[in-house]
Image (cartoon, rainbow, N blue to C red; front, side):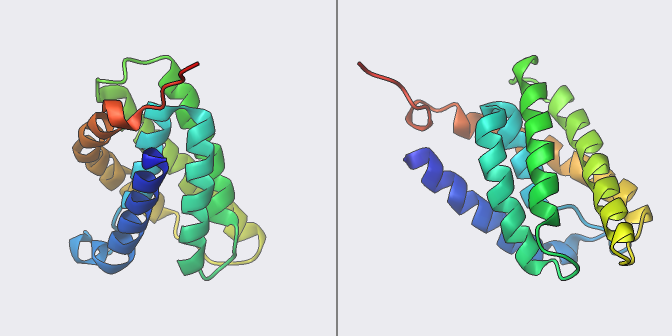
Length: 163
């Protein structure tokens, strides 16, 4: 229960930071989504099924502020979290190289998916932003991965089965 509560609070915190503060840290009007970087890190650490639910919930929160179409972020976050969870099954989770590289690739994947879906429904999207957001997201993952890993590997955050 504590893990769900802490994760929900972190999602809300990163959502608020994304929408209120990240614009001040933009470089040429490009800035990363802390929430998206968080759900990738969470999925790598905790697996695809927990990541799926966190991705859908975070996507719904992002869709509230996304004016072009509702549900696109939920769908893309769900797919990205499943892929990140699969990546996390086969790596040493205490190392940062693969999660950082995965964040770069998965941010490009989500950005291209968002670009294609918006083009299909007739909305304008900036393809240039995909690459810059990916680079910036990779830098943020470099800073965020270790604290998230430590948080979710505490004994109080792990669910232990007792029979």
